[in-house]
Each structure stands twice: as C-alpha cells, then as structure tokens.
Image: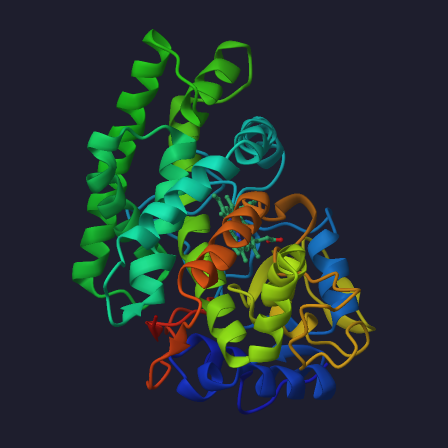
Length: 409
Ligand code: HEM
C-alpha cells in the first residue's frame, strides 16, 4: 500500500473536471499502480481491482455506518447530526443505505420482499409511462435526453410503485427532484434548505398515505408495507417513511443516468446501435454493458470493523474502504478489452450495483426501466443524433451522469 502527495480521493471529491472528463484514465493508473491505496487526506483506503472490490462488497463481516469509521476520515467526519445529536446508528434518521445489522436486515428484509414483487409487475406501466414521456416531445427540433426523458421516467415509475395518485404527481415530482440534492456535499445553503423542505413534505405525505392505506388498502407498495407491518414485521412508521424516501434518493438520479449514459454510448457507437436495432433481444445485454462501461455509480463504501489485510496491505479498524466499482468494471483480469463498448460481450459480471448485504435493492427496477426506455427512444426517433455540444458531467461525487444531453430527432 502507498499513499502519495496527490491524493486521488481528494480529486474525486473536489469538483475536479479532469477526473470527470476521463475517470477511466485515472482509475486505470490507480488499479495498475496502487490497487490498495491509502489516501492521505481523506484517510480512507481505496481499492480498484475487480477481485478485491467484489470480495469486499460481498464480505458481510464488514460494516457500513459512518459511526464505525475513524473520526479523522472523510467518511467518519460527521460526528454530529444536523440537529446536534451525536452520530450513532439510528433508524429514525438513517435508511438501509447506511444501517448495519441487525437493523439493516430487519428493515431491508420486508422492504425487499414487497419491492421485488412490485418491480416484477411494473413492465406494462413502465412502457405506458415511457410512451407518454416520449409523446410529450412530439414536434420538438431538439430536446434534452436528461431533463426531458431521463428525469421524469424513474420518478413517474417509482410514483406508480408507491401508489401516488395522479392528482399529487406534480408535487411528488417536485419533492423527489429536490430530495436528490441530499447527495451533494457541496450543496449551497439554499439547496440544503430545499432538501429539508422536500424531506418534511415527503415525510408528511408518506405518513398521510400510510394512514389512508390502513383504512382502504390499495394495490401499491405503501399498502404492502403497512400490511407487512400489521402481519408482524418489526417496522415502525418512521422506518417505512425514511426507507421510502431512500428509494427516491437511491433510485431516481441513478436511473436517469443509466438512460442518459446509455443513449449517449449507443449514439457514439453506431455499429452497436445498428446491432441492437437488428436484434432487439440484445437489449438486456446492452443494458448490462452500459452499466459496466459507464455505470451511474463510481464507488460504494465499507468500513473495517477490525484490524485486517487487503492483498497483504494492512487495513486498520475504522478505515473506510472505498470500493471503486467503476475501476473494477474495467479490470482486464476479468473483462477482455475492457475499454471497448460491446453489447455482445458474453461474460460481463459487473459490480455496478455493488454486492453482498447492501447490493442495490432497485437493480431489477432500474434494469427494467432502461430495457423499456432505450429501445422505445430509438423506435420513436429512428434518426436520433447528438447535437453539437460540450458534454458537462455532473459534479456530484460518486455519480456519473451528464448535466444535459441535447439530441435532435
Ligand atoms: C442504474 C441504476 C442504479 C445503480 C447503478 C445503483 C447502484 C447502487 C449501488 C452501487 C448501491 C450500493 C451497493 C453496495 O453498497 O454494495 C446501491 C444501493 C441502493 N440502491 Fe441503487 N442503484 C440504481 C438504481 C436504484 C433504484 C431504481 C432504486 C430504488 C427504486 C435504488 C435504491 C437503492 C437503495 C435503497 C440502496 C441501499 C441498499 C442497502 O444498502 O441495503 N437504486 N445502488
């Protein structure tokens, strides 16, 4: 292990345009030069080889909540919550994204049971939503694939999963777009106020809707959750609410970027787009290759709960381990010609959704949305092309997506 004077993570976390312009170049250097690297400023350990990343995310003896992280690390810095309470695992404030067992398993179990069943039934509704979003673009000479297509689709789909009524969709969209700013450590004071406002509105909304479902059950995830609770699942109302919000925070922007990055990649690789058009059954493989090649999330985190070693390098109790999913997905030890975008790739066991106990709960829904949206976009606009533009990648740490993607039908 080495640490150096130009700490990588610092660059990843600052709004470094060089990293954003070509993350793979930096990550390749890291993977080849120092696959287990201690970052001297952030006090975290970064790992970038596929085998290490896969083994680490799958290791259920590691933990995730920042309370376990050394206080002088970037991840462990927030020792106090905004309301002044000391940081501790707290199911009234933390979602499954950060919780460890036993709370993580207690809450994730019933949520996953209900969510997977809902996701499996969502394809027809998603096709309708995609169709309606594309209808809204009729007659346009150009449009933004991000704002006009990628943003509304996942919000409308999750609204349908949760059971948000049409009449409340406009406000739900507004809150959902605002709550995502939670993810931005560089948020301005006004943006932070907006997050707090959206959080309060969503909390009140979910509470009200759960009460309504207890009186009159419906065919939606909120009904499933209150029914599981009534049947004995150990879940408080607050825990249901906070984890429904987590579905919005974890799922909306990521799916937006899967669609945006996918459309961009296919337009930049016309031979791949032609192959997909010639054989639509390639869409599932194409979505997996988009996730591998330019996935929406660059890394996820685990914390060492004990003294341990990674590839013979010491990792100390409390060290946050930054698992570089994007670097792992380009590791030539696993992927032949990893820098080639190839939707016909046979063996592509990417780690874009993380792994183990925290593996993305929304993966089946995100995959299905992209599998519906991407072919529908190219069917509706057979001559779609990229407008002349400079690509600006969003300065949101850990996320990989464009500010806008202007296309011409
Ligand atoms: C392409 C789209 C998506 C990508 C790339 C993605 C990626 C990820 C990753 C990397 C993690 C962390 C896994 C780990 O630490 O091992 C995660 C967790 C999570 N994701 Fe996603 N996600 C996507 C879509 C969604 C959707 C659609 C939803 C919900 C509707 C969602 C909800 C969540 C939640 C709640 C967690 C926390 C799970 C836990 O910690 O137990 N994600 N996702």
